[in-house]
Length: 90
Image (tube, rainbow, N blue to C red):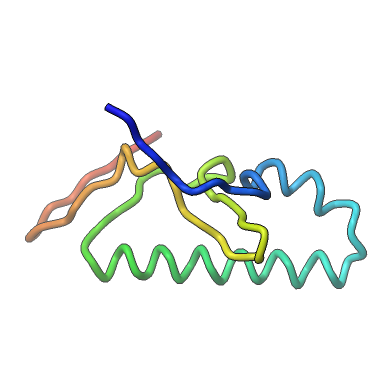
């Protein structure tokens, strides 16, 4: 099997966290809020389609050159149907 994805030119959020520390506070805060808002919209979209990601972490949030964000690594995701409940993690 071969999985082809977009090229995430800015890498993942974990890498970006180190880089963003060098920015002036006001610019840093604006960039963080922009990323958080996009992640929230992504999760809201998934939940509205009955999908739970289960593994959101900086390494699974990818940044594009234009400032947009992509949520990746869906290998632990679940589709919720009916009254299904699950707990993952510790």
